[in-house]
Image (cartoon, rainbow, N blue to C red):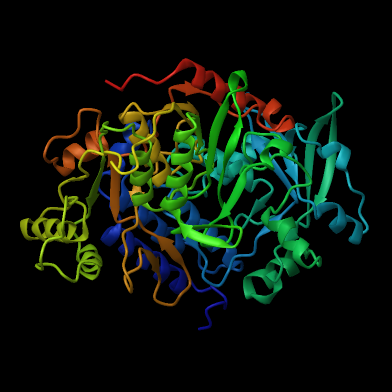
Length: 567
């Protein structure tokens, strides 16, 4: 059967659901602990195995599926019930993405507002012979309904199909999905947005646009034929229309906290994938004094590139922080839209931000004691049994992790003991960072990002300002030929499955060792967002004045000084 062919027979869909169930049961690090973390988060009664079986039985109950996209939506909902931001489902043959060309944001008042619009929207509407309702889609315009449904009800439906380790993280993804998504595809070619403009309710009708090339695959062809949704024939601009791109007005999620003229002075670095990964620079802070600003959009890059030069991630950040320290500047570390990445980067940054002579608690890691994980670390540690490395060795080095996995499997344990990082200390050759540190956080800060936030908070090194992080405490440990992303036997469905759990040690450390039970009870981040010291969420004013409220909060936190260590 062709990979992009129909999925009508129940047997084929049941096979995929069964294989997914088996993969999660075999690999997922939170399989047995998820019921307890969800109960602590206010969602009791979750039974992972019973839920997976219900997903299989649900497919058996559907005799024939005329629209394969509905099958994938059911699988998304199945996986989303685990409330894990790392359980990411993908359709290998490609699910078509659709968009309206505008971006919305959920604000602190609980309302939804227009945040931005694609620069290609006006051109696309003109080519389609449609009027551009630009005046009704200005940044800050309130959106109250979509296709006649209250906007929050539409968000709730979308959120039930989205991965997320907290309700706030799912809400952030759901508001984005209102106008751009690759699931729960619309049944018709247009959407009606009910907005409040000049004190009155107005209806704005916008066409859905499909991603360029959507018609090349069977799933996309069927969607376009059924709904009449069109692709935007705009060359490179079409990608900006559907994928976001540069905005024509308003604020993107990935923007800094400064207006365009000040933001232009920041140096933008791209990551390994070619997209922006960091913006670094010096700005005028409270009282006119100079403040360093580092916006980190990703930790999932080995290098940063700017001006034709590519350098290791930690080299770029280290040089920047040394320059800031030499000038006596404080630091605003913007982590609001950081989707995580390498755990080693979070450790390195937490270490760089410590003053000379200081120390701080490190992280912690637990793995399921499985044959798969043993294979991963056997691949990572081919020299097991060889001469020890020179200098201090971390207990989470591949050799020691492998020994721990083997010991746990031999003892019949489900998990390794907690693998604890030694206390973090700055590199004596670099001297440490002496300035104040304010870290901006939100529910979009996940995984290694919130590990960094947790390390800074546990060590009393930064004032955290903003929203709680996501609470996504899984980690995908993999090696060549042993990917954490699972794909069914016929290449129909793919899901990334965390096989390790990460956490942060308390201010006084965790002792010489910690059992897995203690780790999950006290150290793990999963479904436990890192809380800020000062709460703040995006307001309508931030959308129309380029982050004014975030700037004010950052300056106020710098003026207030360093936090006291958590008890």
